[in-house]
Amino acid sequence: MLRSSLLLLLAAVATGALADPPPEPKVERNVAEDDQVRIEELKVRGETKKVTVKNKLTKAPEYEIVVNDAGRESAGGTGTGLPKSGSGTRVWKVLKF
Image (tube, rainbow, N blue to C red; front, side, top):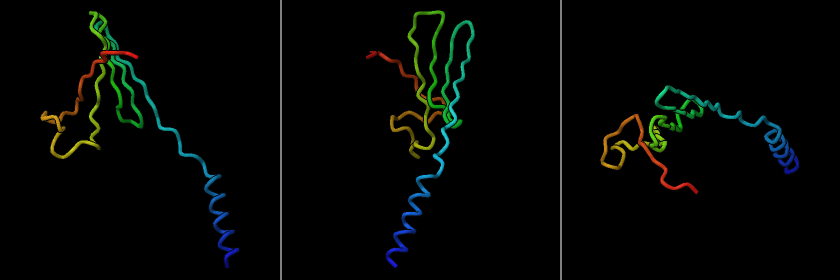
């Protein structure tokens, strides 16, 4: 009885080890550009993860839009006192290391 249980356990472990790994997530990089700005968008599994905006006309630094994750949003709001918005929040990088 113990020997057959051990063999079944080893067979299950060996089968799991030989199984195909999960597929890599689909990653898309989209760029929209005109004579004033360049917008770079990163999507993973169809969900926007990062948006970077670069101004071409002025010396203004580029900024990133942190996209709100609807799955992690609290029911009451953003927790900052600001209303919920699907557009995200602008973030400027001050220091680069």
